[in-house]
Image (tube, rainbow, N blue to C red; front, top):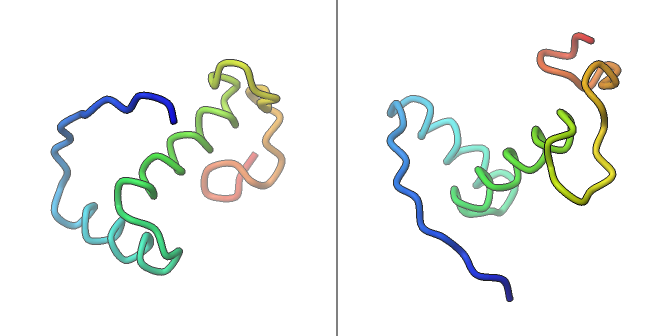
Length: 68
């Protein structure tokens, strides 16, 4: 297993509540949900090293808010 680094993150309480509900719906911990979302956005933006990431502007309807 790869080494994990700890990172303190301060969030708005409403944002944390929304993340907790979403993580629960997806049967994930909040930490796993945040990591999942960060990986997805990094891949979509072509910023995830070593992956087959989508390039900027090549998001179709899956971009933010469903808009290209």
